[in-house]
Image (tube, rainbow, N blue to C red):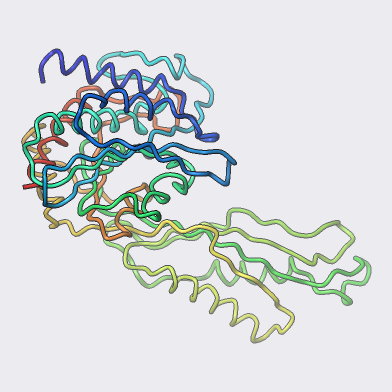
Amino acid sequence: MSETTIHELKSLLFSLIRCNTVNPPGNSREAVDLIVEYLKNTPADIKIIEAWDNKNKTYMYNLIAEYSTGSGKTLIFNGHHDVVPPGANWSYDPFKPVEENGWIIGRGASDMKGGIAAMVYAFKHLCENPDFKGKLVLSIVADEEIDSSAGTRYLLEKGLLKGDYAIVGESTGLNIVTARKGVIWVKIKTLGVAAHGSKPHLGVNAIEKMAKIIERLSKLRWSIRHPRLGKPTMNFGIIRGGTSINTVADECELLIDMRAIPGQKIEDIKKRICGEIEKIRLKDKDLKYEIELIDVFPPYEIDRKHELVKIARKTVKEITGKTPKLLAKPGSSDVVFLAEKGIASIDLGPTGRNAHGANEAVNFESVAKLSEIYIKVAKRILK
Ligand SMILES: [Zn+2]
């Protein structure tokens, strides 16, 4: 990379970090406008798509830029512009980036404005030097830090984001993520009958019923196991119930965070949980309950021999001199929603530090290398 391009990429990254895109509220348009301005002299077709966010009662802003050289496959670059609140213990202003020993420090540097800067730069370069066949799509989205419902999920559901391949630029240390656990949030409610605390036999205690459910579910064992992600897990996150110490509780609610592994079907998991509760009910006719899936981020896996993985691997090795690892991660990213729609997708991003913590940083050299990797992968996959 020349001095001029390094300077251009770095100032793009600095400007992105300066935009305070904290979510919640997640309604900042600044980062999207900045990218529109950066791309304005390219031949790309650029759209700003606003999505109503019901959680925060506000609009959130997504950018989709497309450039096609004619028939062929479509590659999507995807990155989220929202960041988590800065929190405490920063040695710097989180929204005034500084460079120290090759690291750029600021909220969102690693998660994931470093990745965005690399893909926006690569997209512009590819539009100006269209040495590929097919279509490139740049999607810079909102709301990933909460649940993506006004970001990637919204764009996919509305049919506004379509493609054959996708690269998500979350920080991966220039490695490739090929598997992720899914997230299933389950709400179980038991329903009892209220009575005076001095005469509990006249009521049905919803808390006691929930205790039976917890006991049973905590013994639940899954026979399947993923070679890299291990077994599915379950955590009882929140329990609420009862109205006063001297009243038989007529309601109790339990929230469960379940992490599924690739290959597990959401419906099967729900059936299994219901099946366990039904076993209790066979012996306890007073047990009344409701079960609801509050949110689902499906488990994800791409074949490690898929052409996108192979091309990405070869290109990273050529540009960095190091063979990237193929990683499996317990956490989720927008990759899972893209993959759910049948788009072959990977996470491939820069080297970050302290994402979501104080003094978050990204290694600038890895951002520069990443932009070269993106350009080369695009040319290789769109041929
Ligand atoms: Zn992220």
